[in-house]
Amino acid sequence: MNLVEPGTMYGDRINQIDVRIGKTFTYRRARALVAIDVYNAANSSAVLTYNYAFVPGGTWLRPLTILTPRFVRITTQIDF
Image 1 (cartoon, rainbow, N blue to C red):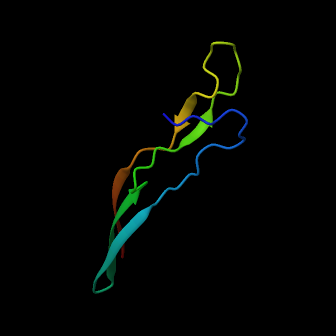
Image 2 (image 1 turned 180 degrees about the vertical axis):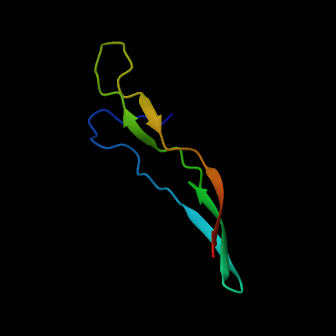
């Protein structure tokens, strides 16, 4: 678990790579687009928010949310 050192103001750098690969097919006047989207391709787990509420012996600077995990979306669009 990456915690921010006391006295620092910012957490980890957020690096997210999104990739889209698509192909357009045409048949007469119709056109179809097939695409695959991959979000967070590197599967980064950078921390987005921390608990900044200080309570002695509590959960100060514990990560509350992390970057959304990798997921894939397949899409099709047909124009005619």
